[in-house]
Amino acid sequence: MPGTPRQCWCFVCGFTLIEILVVIAVLGIATALATANLFQTDEEKLQQEGEKLLAVLQIARDEAAFGGRIIAVTIAGNEIRFLERDFADPTRWSESVIEGLRPRALTEALNAQLRVGSTAPESKDSHITFLPIGVAAPFELLLRGPAGSRKISGDAIGNLRIAKD
Image (cartoon, rainbow, N blue to C red; front, side):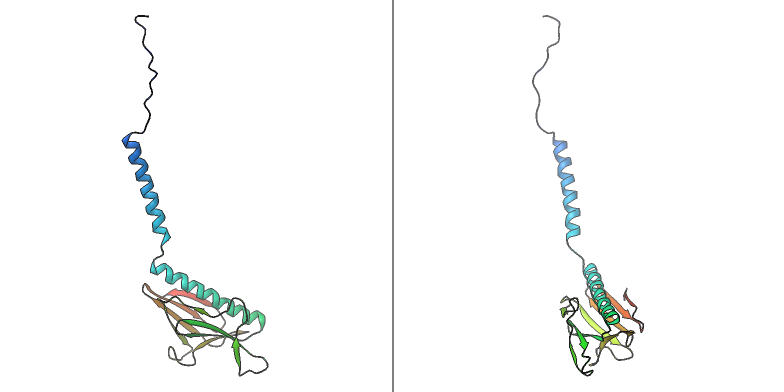
Protein backbone atom coordinates (compact mmCIF):
# COMPACT_ATOMS: atom_id res chain seq x y z
CA MET A 1 0.00 0.00 0.00
CA PRO A 2 1.52 3.17 -1.06
CA GLY A 3 1.67 6.03 1.40
CA THR A 4 1.37 3.98 4.58
CA PRO A 5 4.26 4.04 7.02
CA ARG A 6 6.26 0.88 7.36
CA GLN A 7 6.60 -0.72 10.75
CA CYS A 8 10.13 -1.55 11.78
CA TRP A 9 10.52 -4.90 13.53
CA CYS A 10 14.17 -4.56 14.29
CA PHE A 11 15.17 -3.90 17.93
CA VAL A 12 18.49 -2.54 19.04
CA CYS A 13 19.80 -4.61 22.00
CA GLY A 14 22.59 -3.66 24.43
CA PHE A 15 23.66 -0.92 26.82
CA THR A 16 24.90 2.52 26.04
CA LEU A 17 28.31 3.65 27.14
CA ILE A 18 26.75 6.07 29.65
CA GLU A 19 24.78 3.26 31.33
CA ILE A 20 27.89 1.12 31.70
CA LEU A 21 29.89 4.02 33.16
CA VAL A 22 27.15 4.79 35.70
CA VAL A 23 27.06 1.16 36.89
CA ILE A 24 30.86 1.07 37.21
CA ALA A 25 30.85 4.33 39.19
CA VAL A 26 28.15 3.07 41.59
CA LEU A 27 30.02 -0.22 42.13
CA GLY A 28 33.26 1.69 42.76
CA ILE A 29 31.64 3.93 45.38
CA ALA A 30 30.01 0.95 47.13
CA THR A 31 33.32 -0.94 47.19
CA ALA A 32 35.17 2.07 48.61
CA LEU A 33 32.62 2.48 51.40
CA ALA A 34 32.66 -1.22 52.27
CA THR A 35 36.46 -1.36 52.33
CA ALA A 36 36.73 1.72 54.56
CA ASN A 37 34.53 0.07 57.20
CA LEU A 38 36.33 -3.30 57.15
CA PHE A 39 39.59 -2.14 58.71
CA GLN A 40 39.71 -0.52 62.13
CA THR A 41 41.95 2.43 62.80
CA ASP A 42 44.42 2.35 65.69
CA GLU A 43 42.14 4.76 67.56
CA GLU A 44 39.17 2.39 67.20
CA LYS A 45 41.27 -0.59 68.31
CA LEU A 46 42.44 1.29 71.40
CA GLN A 47 38.89 2.32 72.30
CA GLN A 48 37.59 -1.20 71.76
CA GLU A 49 40.34 -2.76 73.89
CA GLY A 50 39.71 -0.20 76.63
CA GLU A 51 35.98 -0.95 76.62
CA LYS A 52 36.63 -4.70 76.78
CA LEU A 53 38.97 -4.26 79.74
CA LEU A 54 36.45 -1.99 81.47
CA ALA A 55 33.74 -4.64 80.99
CA VAL A 56 35.97 -7.35 82.50
CA LEU A 57 36.78 -5.13 85.48
CA GLN A 58 33.06 -4.54 85.96
CA ILE A 59 32.52 -8.32 85.98
CA ALA A 60 35.24 -8.67 88.65
CA ARG A 61 33.65 -5.87 90.70
CA ASP A 62 30.20 -7.42 90.42
CA GLU A 63 31.45 -10.92 91.28
CA ALA A 64 33.13 -9.51 94.39
CA ALA A 65 30.05 -7.57 95.45
CA PHE A 66 27.39 -10.16 94.73
CA GLY A 67 29.45 -13.27 95.43
CA GLY A 68 31.02 -12.04 98.66
CA ARG A 69 34.49 -12.69 97.26
CA ILE A 70 37.72 -10.72 97.33
CA ILE A 71 39.08 -10.52 93.79
CA ALA A 72 42.40 -9.03 92.77
CA VAL A 73 43.42 -7.98 89.27
CA THR A 74 47.13 -8.01 88.46
CA ILE A 75 48.79 -6.73 85.33
CA ALA A 76 52.22 -8.04 84.41
CA GLY A 77 53.53 -6.97 81.04
CA ASN A 78 50.63 -7.50 78.66
CA GLU A 79 48.91 -10.19 80.73
CA ILE A 80 45.96 -9.58 83.01
CA ARG A 81 45.27 -12.15 85.73
CA PHE A 82 42.39 -12.47 88.17
CA LEU A 83 42.96 -13.93 91.63
CA GLU A 84 40.56 -14.87 94.43
CA ARG A 85 41.42 -14.84 98.10
CA ASP A 86 41.16 -18.23 99.78
CA PHE A 87 38.62 -18.12 102.62
CA ALA A 88 40.42 -20.87 104.55
CA ASP A 89 43.81 -19.15 104.33
CA PRO A 90 43.51 -15.34 103.91
CA THR A 91 47.18 -15.05 102.97
CA ARG A 92 46.74 -17.30 99.93
CA TRP A 93 45.47 -16.25 96.51
CA SER A 94 44.40 -18.62 93.73
CA GLU A 95 43.50 -18.19 90.07
CA SER A 96 39.89 -17.19 89.61
CA VAL A 97 37.53 -19.97 88.52
CA ILE A 98 34.88 -17.53 87.34
CA GLU A 99 34.15 -17.96 83.63
CA GLY A 100 34.59 -14.30 82.61
CA LEU A 101 37.74 -13.82 84.67
CA ARG A 102 40.29 -15.99 82.91
CA PRO A 103 43.84 -14.71 82.30
CA ARG A 104 44.01 -12.72 79.09
CA ALA A 105 46.61 -10.89 77.06
CA LEU A 106 46.31 -7.35 75.85
CA THR A 107 46.90 -6.54 72.22
CA GLU A 108 50.64 -6.47 71.52
CA ALA A 109 50.63 -2.82 70.49
CA LEU A 110 49.20 -1.73 73.86
CA ASN A 111 51.11 -0.95 77.01
CA ALA A 112 49.32 -1.03 80.39
CA GLN A 113 50.42 1.00 83.38
CA LEU A 114 48.63 0.60 86.72
CA ARG A 115 48.63 3.09 89.58
CA VAL A 116 46.81 2.07 92.76
CA GLY A 117 46.15 4.60 95.50
CA SER A 118 49.23 6.73 96.09
CA THR A 119 51.75 4.10 94.93
CA ALA A 120 54.10 4.79 92.10
CA PRO A 121 53.04 3.39 88.72
CA GLU A 122 54.00 -0.23 88.21
CA SER A 123 55.23 -0.81 91.76
CA LYS A 124 55.70 -4.46 92.67
CA ASP A 125 52.51 -4.71 94.73
CA SER A 126 50.27 -2.89 92.26
CA HIS A 127 47.01 -4.73 91.89
CA ILE A 128 43.36 -3.78 91.92
CA THR A 129 41.45 -5.36 94.77
CA PHE A 130 37.69 -5.62 94.57
CA LEU A 131 36.10 -6.16 97.97
CA PRO A 132 32.46 -7.11 98.57
CA ILE A 133 31.89 -3.48 99.64
CA GLY A 134 33.75 -1.78 96.78
CA VAL A 135 37.35 -1.18 95.76
CA ALA A 136 40.13 -1.39 98.34
CA ALA A 137 41.96 1.63 96.89
CA PRO A 138 41.21 3.97 94.00
CA PHE A 139 43.17 3.13 90.86
CA GLU A 140 44.08 4.37 87.41
CA LEU A 141 44.92 1.99 84.60
CA LEU A 142 46.51 3.70 81.62
CA LEU A 143 46.41 1.94 78.24
CA ARG A 144 48.84 3.40 75.73
CA GLY A 145 48.87 2.57 72.06
CA PRO A 146 50.10 4.08 68.78
CA ALA A 147 46.97 6.20 68.49
CA GLY A 148 46.93 7.65 72.00
CA SER A 149 45.85 6.46 75.41
CA ARG A 150 42.80 5.61 77.48
CA LYS A 151 42.51 5.83 81.25
CA ILE A 152 40.32 3.42 83.18
CA SER A 153 39.77 4.62 86.71
CA GLY A 154 37.94 3.31 89.72
CA ASP A 155 37.00 4.99 92.98
CA ALA A 156 36.64 3.57 96.49
CA ILE A 157 32.97 2.66 96.08
CA GLY A 158 33.51 0.71 92.85
CA ASN A 159 32.53 3.21 90.17
CA LEU A 160 34.51 2.46 87.01
CA ARG A 161 34.91 4.72 83.99
CA ILE A 162 36.98 5.09 80.85
CA ALA A 163 38.20 8.36 79.39
CA LYS A 164 40.61 9.63 76.77
CA ASP A 165 43.87 10.62 78.38
